[in-house]
Amino acid sequence: MSNTKALPLLEPASGEAAAPCCPPLTERPFTAEEADVAARMFKALGDPVRLRLFSAVASHEGGEACVCDISDVGVSQPTVSHHLKKLKDAGLLTSERRGTWVYYRVEPSVFAAMGQLLAPR
Amino acid sequence: MSNTKALPLLEPASGEAAAPCCPPLTERPFTAEEADVAARMFKALGDPVRLRLFSAVASHEGGEACVCDISDVGVSQPTVSHHLKKLKDAGLLTSERRGTWVYYRVEPSVFAAMGQLLAPR
DNA sequence: CGTCTATGTTGACACATGTCGAACCAGTGC
DNA sequence: GCACTGGTTCGACATGTGTCAACATAGACG
Image 1: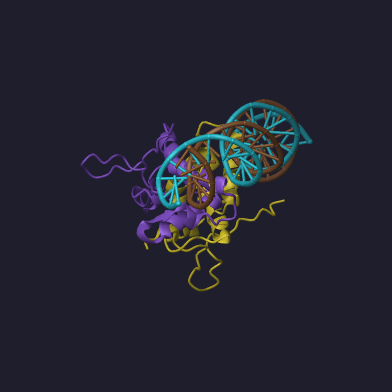
Image 2: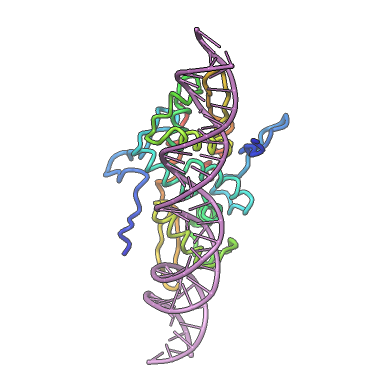
């Protein structure tokens, strides 16, 4: 499985300056395509449980967190797994298994992309 | 009606420096309450149509836009109105009727709140 | 191999959400 | 008052989403 590939919020940046997915929100009206891409990210963060998970990973020392470290958000374990998968599919997190545990970390380009969206006119 | 009041993303800022709703995402794991407030904003922007509407308002000259200026996003006019109401309920937009037309503008505290969320550790 | 722990996947279900057409309200101008 | 235009609200419907229990998988450790 896992043909659900994470779509990059920033272009691959093939050697040159990264071409962000979208201009600042205040620059001009978004096109349908830009809105689709950017909305995916906002949507992924638009759930309290996912936001807590994302924040827990983003604030964890070393920039990564084991599921066991962050799964105390008031929902069942399968639900945590489900939300982490959604964050991963949205391109916000990456995961890696090391032995018994699975570690999640924030996709580096995320904050750049969000900063770009919020850049002042 | 309209007891659905827009909840402020920033505290009322009663005379002093505004106390933002939430710390940076990277500072520490969000509490359930912080996540509820912040997720509402992300959720509101997590729909392509709403994101286009928000961008259209935010980028419009004068900082405000008449519905008639921005309602060309590929959905029916009632749907546009529905989404604008959601953005308003989320505290992202304000509206004002002037004569025949209704004007929407971005709630000023929004960019401050979002910037705060994305502040680097 | 067998078992135990840590995660992910499946299936089912209630609920929220996006969408539209029809009806309705607010101003304008005749 | 009446018609017209710009916007909102209502009612209905299909689809999406969050949640859990049950089951499945991956390593670790005997």
